[in-house]
Length: 139
Ligand SMILES: [Zn+2]
Image 1 (spheres, helix red, strand yellow):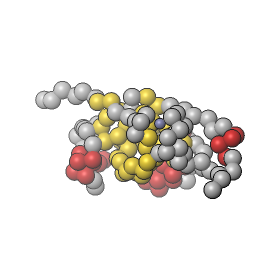
Image 2 (cartoon, helix red, strand yellow; image 1 turned 60 degrees about the vertical axis):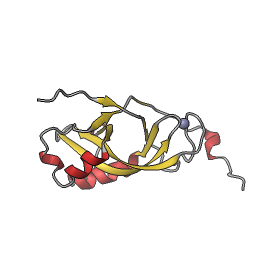
Image 3 (cartoon, protein in one colour; image 1 turned 90 degrees about the vertical axis):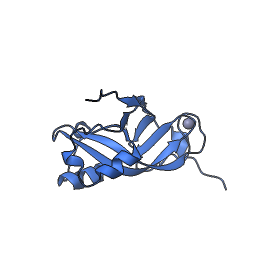
Image 4 (cartoon, protein in one colour; image 1 turned 60 degrees about the horizontal axis):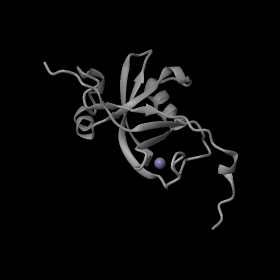
């Protein structure tokens, strides 16, 4: 049996602001890139590890992944067939290796080791949007 060693990769920020998509990194102020990668989301009440291939904002300097909270909530609500969830219903734990994700597509609920290929986040950060952030964008 292989020993389970959980790798750590990336920092994570769950963006609660529907009107701010963080085109700049809230930590270093560089422009963020777009990155699509499988997020490992723990649905605690259902005891399900839900893998979601999601387009996120990404800062390569800070290794920071930014996902929109309300977008995740909509997808999870659809998945669960409910019309309301709270913060306590789901936890974004990390990312899954793309090759492992592709292999598991369609059978993710019956996988023996749901954390296979999953790297948990090094840390989860929280940022508050400053009022100035909404300032006029001069072109
Ligand atoms: Zn950054």
